[in-house]
Image 1 (cartoon, rainbow, N blue to C red):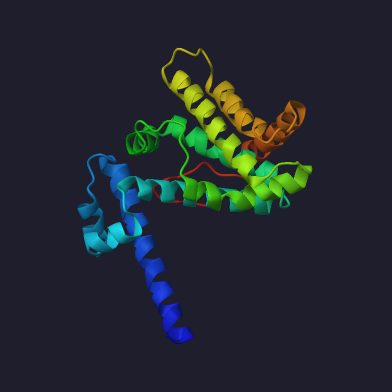
Image 2 (tube, one colour):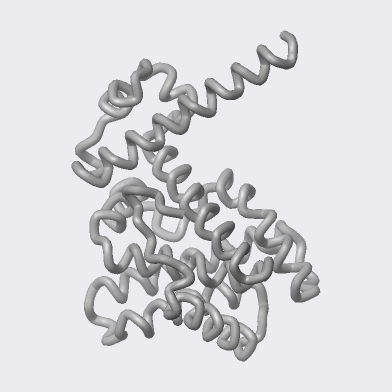
Length: 225
């Protein structure tokens, strides 16, 4: 296969995956994750169900990929506006996404239904895809930590974050939205063993950028980053 033909095949694959994800995004938002079948997604994307399951064997894999794309878009957007500051961009991304989960019940419901019974679990593929972010943060603070160490800590951090979120959503925590978001983001910073006063300083800088309107609210349906 010559290079132009290979490029065309890769382009066609990327276009097909983009259609799947966009149609799934719309259907999940409008009808709920549980009410949407993979056949329906395939029909709306103009492909066979077999081709869809070739790319995404399980329906929840589609949600995991959408979530990763959203994380990546927000992170890249923030990275450009923070002078390539990896940790500041990471905090901004976590804050924006977690606030969206709190303020957009449909978004939270999609993930809760997709990953029911897997609270705090980590998709190993998307975890590995985020390695470039973790590597940048490790370099930024000269952290003596391997990626295997990071992966282990991310799993523990996700478990703690999920427990905190469940407590907050139950209405029994007594925490305000701002208190919950700060605590949740600080948990993720702690996994990297960055001192609390540094995490707090970066969190305050992130809030300044967000409050000034330099980082927009997240729009799940229109994927606005």
